[in-house]
Length: 139
Image 1 (cartoon, one colour):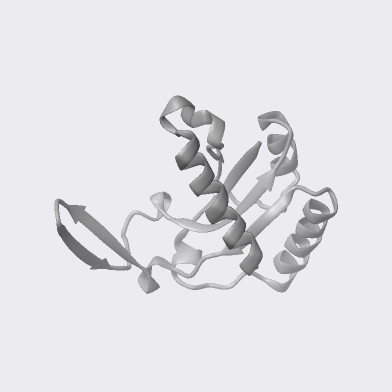
Image 2 (cartoon, one colour):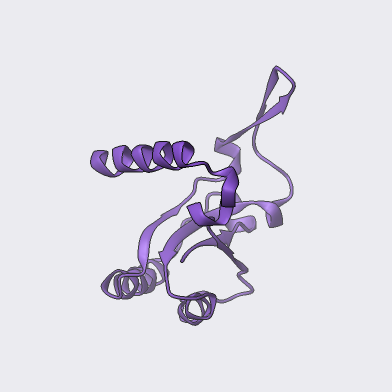
């Protein structure tokens, strides 16, 4: 099963304050452990919301809202995508992350094709698998 590990933004990440060399070193070691264990599929930090936009959909109308966004506790500073055997395994790996200072991390399971049941018809499933194969071929 796959999990998205969501690193919440804080005032420093929203202000564009970069992590210290020590934290970058510790995070690099941690990411190496995740890769060696075959768990990490992806992981990235995100620019502050001041460099982002939101697009609001209302019928056929699309409204673009420029950042920054004010509620930093609802914002994301980075993420990992992990492949693990269980939620408990993901939690155990997450507990080893080199965070402190009240950092809050959210762990969310990613939907798999089987989770959609009969609504994901064989035709839709084949289309999804074809798209995933195309993405994988480009990377």
